[in-house]
Amino acid sequence: MLYTNDEAYYEFINIHGELNCNKNPIIFGYGDELDNSYSEIEKLQDNHFLENIKSIKYHQTRNYRTLLKFIESGIYQVFVMGHSCGNSDRTLLNTLFEHNNCVSLKVYYRQFKNGSDDYSNLIRNISRNFNDKHKMRDIVVNWEDSLPLVPSKEVI
Image (cartoon, rainbow, N blue to C red; front, side, top):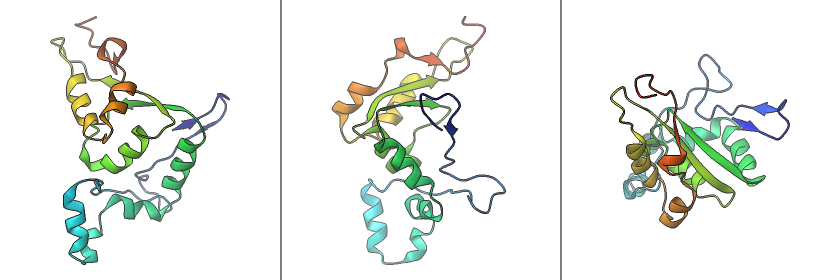
């Protein structure tokens, strides 16, 4: 979702598509071009292996370009809600997280009934999306200043 200071203006970018929408088809696939295995796949010179690479699928719509225009337009904060931040979106997440305009990355973690949570696991996943670990340490909001997405009633 994109937003501005004008609360009346919101723009959603469904980067991975929408159900039942021919103009914005669902995009599933592999999205880690930063991994050495990706260059090995390209060297095979077989387009079939690139069929479900997200960066190629993103060219079906304007969504990726719209997202790039947004991150170039000024400073922003990333809020992670319900996303594993795993390697399947590594290239896109790296673009968002390491951009100079990204000033903060705040995780809304899952809290379990026993009081534990998955914050640390999410941060480990997020760390794999950074090549610049210094930037990661600078922008990721610590656990004490983060919140559960849905607080467990037993813990409150």
